[in-house]
Image 1 (tube, rainbow, N blue to C red):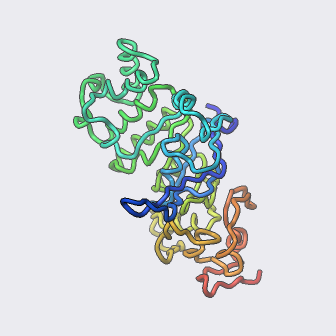
Image 2 (image 1 turned 135 degrees about the vertical axis):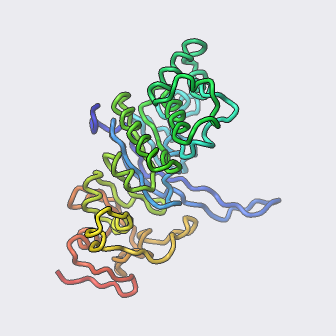
Image 3 (image 1 turned 45 degrees about the vertical axis):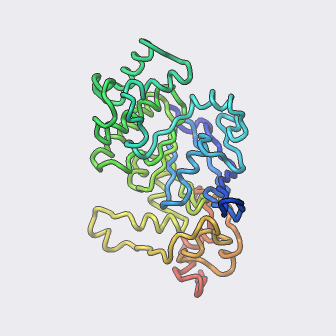
Length: 349
């Protein structure tokens, strides 16, 4: 599999805003939920891009917008140069054969009234690819690929464990031989031991079928294991993008540092000595997000001069990371102390 031989997906200034209306008889527009607000990144062919951030930051909405399961408000979503965001429905239907999704909840994402054979074969029928014995043969092949026994096809979802149901979802997503799979927290509802099995299966399937993944998760340990690069998201915006190993060894954005400081390390000596970064306050509302840098209201390194008023661009930092922080280099070099915004001080180098 050739990783990094060009971008399969390019997202440019993507916005997804949900209008808020008040009133029953007369519906009055009063604002927007800015779930995704100016997001840009790319996914190389054959790689796994991890998308992480705390709950409510817009990860799932971003993944769904890439597949047009939710409609983008503005921006471009290029799949091999074709703008999905502006694509007519009839063309989008053909394009969707190459893009599939694995959902978070293996219990609600499968139709309880259909047996496994019908669930896995449904994409083949919908797109007119196979029916009858040909579809049955394809289903048997897919179930074998994801590690389910042959007698699974005549059983119903309630007869399977959570991990087995997620394997059924994977088999369904592979039915059309897609290029891109958006995996929306595919292991968060599973036991830890089962999580490892599904992650290993995802890696095997990627090698076998030359897949590209957008892997959405909040578990940083899982993301580190499976991802080639990681994008960190906060309140609808991308804060940092970097190769997985580099991000975990040397995070440069304050929010990334705070996230990683909360991940326990199975070494008592290291755990006792490392710095813990405690964020003050709650996640602001995406209806009325803070001005300037979205993270400045909780950032231990925020500075009065720029952070509350000036929006930081996602730029290339000294290390090659992409980061959206005015002072990333100064924080890394220790030239800014960890003070609150009210008494922030720049330390002379």
